[in-house]
Length: 321
Image 1 (cartoon, rainbow, N blue to C red):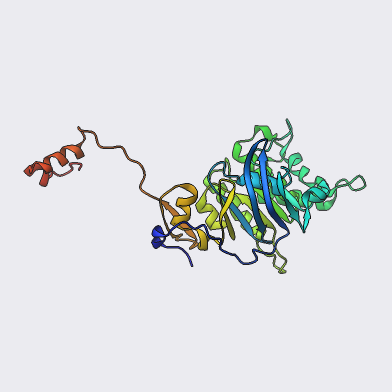
Image 2 (tube, one colour):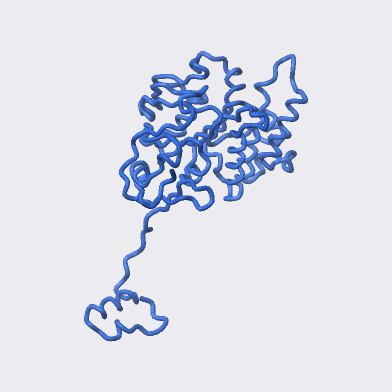
């Protein structure tokens, strides 16, 4: 059931809601604790990523969402607990085997100097190659398809460092797609993109997770997003974090309430159904506005009204009140 405006009165949504398939997933975190030197960022986090679904992690800045994603991709060693892939700790799995299962697009990737778009996208195929098999027709098809899906085919011969921020972001996404993994981790994939390309990328994410025509399960995607409304629209499962812990997780329609938004983001809001998808739509409360000055028309009319002036009760046409 989608939340409505009545959710504005709801309390904090700290209880966990369960989404279909929430307990079934190849990738999971158990009692995961993450830290940078002496600063603990994530504390004893338990998370199971459901297979064939889009899981979106949201939360305020510095809450640990990107740090969690890095650990899921083995870019960060846990201080405590573990990340499991098919029941085995990532630390015990060879790097190349992980790269064939998990594709990760970090928040600020860096391309080698002067590398072309086609060469960078082709690097996504490295986990599938060996000394006896360098480049195949399958590699070529994967690269061509990834570039077409992200609309960067026309940029193939250009240097990556000459591109705009939005173009570079789409090239990186193409490289992640070319890796052709069952699990795809995306850290803020809409960064630098205009609204049209944001929608295109998120539509693509949904397509990747959708079952194929033959019934084969789609890819498993975990992404970090800042835009709560985009997260609610595109996620099968939403994970809300605050201060290194999961506050709520489940279907967006089950957990996105005014209480949750207030608890996690400290924002008063009203939740209404999205008129296009029916998913929860977060409408922020009244924005800040400056207090009227003594010389403003509003202040003058207010003072006149208080004194009983006839001119205040009968404003002239066009007068601002």
